[in-house]
Length: 328
Image (cartoon, rainbow, N blue to C red; front, side, top):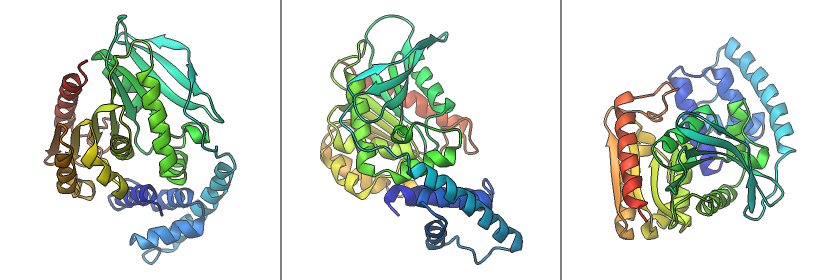
């Protein structure tokens, strides 16, 4: 397992134990993420969620789920794109809401298109830019709504699709998670760099650097981008895992970082002291905000863990942070 595959499976095991996910769905997702039924079951066993506690009904469901997922995994693997050079141009047809002008973005220039969703303020002008990274479910309507919220607050917001290497996010979110786990982390970070550079060069985006924010998996990718890309001027990773190789990069980042955590999310929040120590070495502005009583994914108002009070406060603080640190 790579670091994100383990991260995904640990999250799904938690969902299963909290009765938010059936065992059959857990096995299906593990099979997709690990590329087969055998490695999928082996990974779950390594995480303490093997088959010893199954009854006969569970075992039947496990076999069916693994068979279906293995066939899907084989089909997905045959369509994987190869790494390409950073994107050069983009096309998209725009629509408008009361608060934002929106368009589906297709950034071309290589063997595959980097996909995304762009939201701009209605009024013409130059605005600060923010890149938004989705959860492990891929680019969905919730993430697009966040982009529109930023546009309504005076930002040009680009919601990325890191499933672009496999043709873009699918309705079956388990396939999106599998794609994110299967593609090398270094290639996903390269995609993030391309998205940052694209937004920086977009007409109507304020010069001098952009912000990056993300949630769950997207929070982790935000940390990865902060640690590797100089074009990031400000960041707000929400409950994101920091990989070991990115942890070192935080000591030299030039970005102003607002780290957002849920107090009950001990699997992620246990890194806070280490993150703080690294950011202190950077000399860049930073703040760590931990919301007592809030769980993982507390910002997602479509999910089981939504915490309205924490989400509203985090949103207010993030807007203020970006406005302060993205000033020209």
